[in-house]
Image (tube, rainbow, N blue to C red; front, side, top):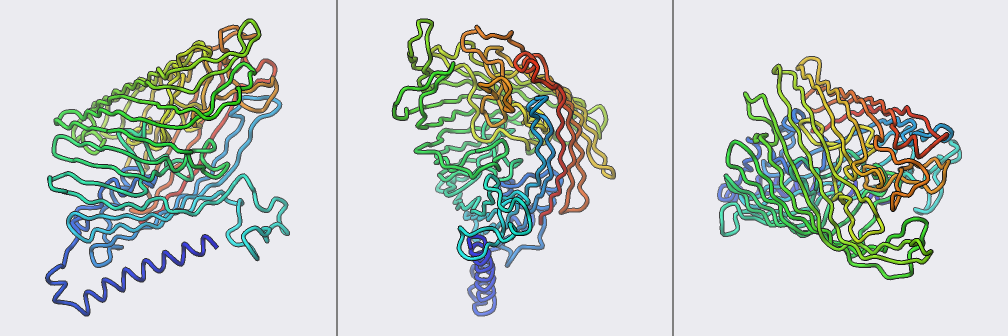
Length: 546
């Protein structure tokens, strides 16, 4: 019923908009002559931030931006996007008796409308359907709680852990040049994406993505841009790729701050300060159950800067061969209390403060016009003693996911088996792009724990740990006070990835990726006999849009 309602609503929007503009053109020619506004985006292409909900390589994004086929009365642009992806993940938990084997096909589909009815007014609505093939049925008989009709013919029927979601991904209004040229405000549900999206991004690799309800005040001039952000958190990645369960609402939580960009010419400098305000439960470690307590207020402040010479819409200017990007961030604020059992056997607690640090450096050189050789490194130390009053592990913000172009450097490997917390990860890559053959990206990553006593963390930010020796869950060598029963290892795994991208037309592209992982001593020492070093990941993705 929900899908049917949205489809009907979508059709109504299209028909109403077309009828309205047609009536204006046929019945009131005099009024059109007086107010016959034509959107400048028809000729120069859509603004980049109107495509933040879609995972697109640069060539496809440019083609869609400049497409003029679906403009209605030259003020309303419709768009369609579909991205099915097949993934195979084999033994990413590095377990011999209980290897995780995941084979799934996900699909993200969008219908969107961008309206520019006047010089300073813009609106965008994006309807999105996210699903896993073979999961929840599209239509059920009777009421919404009735059984899947396919259950008679197939053994599984509905998969309760693979829920489909049809929703409004975006619905925002933007008004610009409010008294001052370049000053504007954007209000409603929107995607936040800044810089290389290491701090805030759309998370478009996963099947649902991220959106926020709120207000962004914008100032954009030739040499300076600034966004003041105040949003309510609407969703979070509930699974590794946001598909194992429905997204959930943060309880009484907000994201606020600023993101400033200086554009002097030779480089781009981003300076940001972001606050994440949440109610969180106290934490417990070393098998201690947290004492009964109401949720505590947690205020996480992240201050950072990013410098790059990629000044042409985050790409190198024409003719340039050498690129460099540096980013650093620091955190402060009050973290939830931690409960633990001390050496005397008593349950005690410590109040804690955030003191995380994060550093990223990247450079590359075009040895040929079609070939780039590059390297990058992540460094983010963890917490040596998690019973202390300092939480030194960097807390990731919403959206640090696969999908950053031009060098796919936002994530630590296509396996997404390690995030940006407690990490020291150097990497080298070679990319080759040919107009006829497509683009090939070969990357080698050496993934380590920066602090051996802390956990190794998933891309979602959750610790990969297990209390039982032979559990199928991924484990870490975490130890609260460096007194573990096993030695503490540093290397988590090495990963070798090959990704192929090919744009077959102005509106269709193919991505194929394959990755091999080999676990290191950090996992081997923790698992003991329950250990298998080799793991694999592959995917095939087709993107079609107009």
